[in-house]
Image (cartoon, rainbow over all chains, first blue to last red; front, side, top):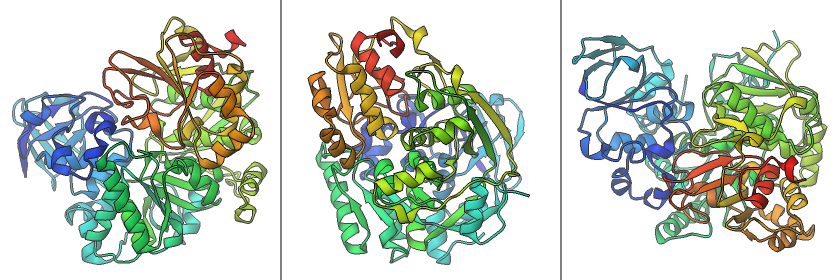
Length: 164
Length: 417
């Protein structure tokens, strides 16, 4: 069970909002890079976020670049899962590959600052603040396996191969 | 039941009868990274326990994004990639050789290939009839080590384009129009497959522009049949033997068909800060710009430069407009010099960049000041994309970009020609 506060963002949060290209010189210095997470969407996010919290987006979260640094800095900020109405394809796969759950649900029913409880096995999000209960769909089996191994690199290290 | 291009390629490469929705393990024919995603790939590869590259001759590390290096950190990342290439025996494409999405087409992509790159615009290779998609650093590390990865076989949208482009309208206007119509997430997870009379007649340059931007509609791939035009392109880069014909089955099943009449298209522009926020150039008069960029992996090819030269020749940009031109590869730079394009553009006041990603990556070479606006032939106009979240990026064709450079405001090329 994951518990934490919702940090709400709008539609179309791009990988340039999450970690802009101008910080490319920090990509081999991850702790420094992570200080700029979501800076162009909410300059105070990095100060507000606490371990276990959730990033809550609208439609097409994570569109744009293939930079895996985008989900990586969100994970490094302590975020336990990303919730969104829809997610861009490469970002989705990258997040799962890093062991960061991405849950597709009706985030219109969540407000900024709400306390959430996520049950990954049951596929439910409980908004403790407003009492709403949301459900999210199952991800493909292969992604679930990768997520459960803590990401694709751990998966390959353990199995030496990839199977579906 | 017939197969789409995506289904055909993924069936062949997975050894299964792949249908949309299936999850398959497919062999990867080409895996590449670039200098902002590659260092993470190298570290992930090294920590994965995989020790050897499955196919070093078909693994390429590109140093194209921050070139020549603007700072010590980037230089150290470049060193890491050069050392890894030396150790593993894979290919290295170092500074000045060009943007990965051009060099991959000149030197590596074959019709029917599965191509993965740690860069979202890897879709460009779909123009040559490959299944090409962008992935993150870890996924590409897996493909490099195992020679394969898992793929969900996408449903396909058939984009049926017929008719002739009006004068000064091109492939860029078509793809901007399509993205404006279906939205930046209109094709998420889908394969966009391009058909019709306009597509059959279209040059490789136009096909590359369209495939490059398929990802801006959220698509996993943007694929064209491999035909005589593909064959001629491969011959022109001394790879005629890599050609094989490839087309979708006539009875392939598409999730949707989108019909576009090329005759009705007009010069189109994406306004800040979304690619699907499109308008017609003629409706954006009085939009002042301080910088024009012609080039990048979207529109930095010979045909694009020829259009720019034809509009700019003997003229200068309006006062207060900086004109930046970046050919997409060394091969293109050389050809453009031989044709006299570079001299002509310099005489028209252009600053010529070395082949690379330059202004589009938002680190150096043309970063914008507060409140400035740029009209670029690149593929993305997100907030902060060109180095400054307080600036504004418009996207358009080389013709619209060149015309706008002359007037200092967004201009339909038909108004100056």
